[in-house]
Image (cartoon, rainbow, N blue to C red; front, top):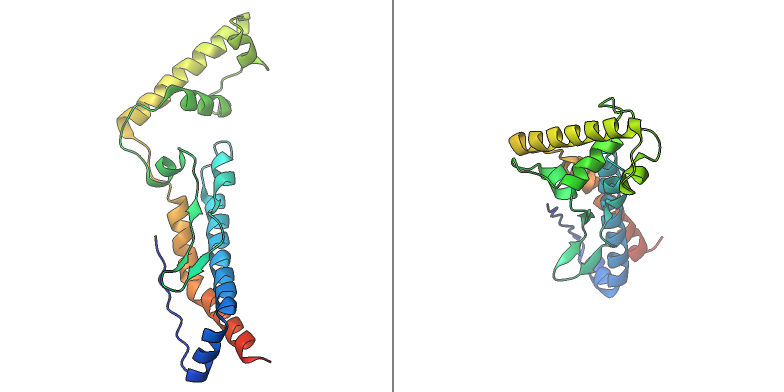
Length: 191
């Protein structure tokens, strides 16, 4: 998504001063962009699915805003995790990979009333089962299959955690940029 904001300085004297001090414009507009990107990231973190918190932690601005006179300011907010896009945009029906779904079922086992002793996965990994473990393991396998089949039939619905955050901050973007534009004018014209 893209925000296009044009800042116009009318007095010719002010324009001349701005051209003489591009570092001030670059610094203040970079701050404005960083401010907007941090707001988007903070709102997206609150809205993101809370699987393990990895998606929330990975949402951040992709570096400080960079200003070039011909191309304008550019910045990114997002995540490099493979589950970020499917959570944001949803998916068509498909069979998801086994391991992430099994992981999700394990983390949400209380929702499915799976009672497993502590260290169950360590014992399972070693190939040793106790009486109670085998039943819990079978329950986990069944629930994992059912969740995968539901995704294969219906897909995943979109969560819109990032797009909604962007749209919310976009409403305030003009005010934020105006604040930093006033800082530019104050710094260039003096006290």
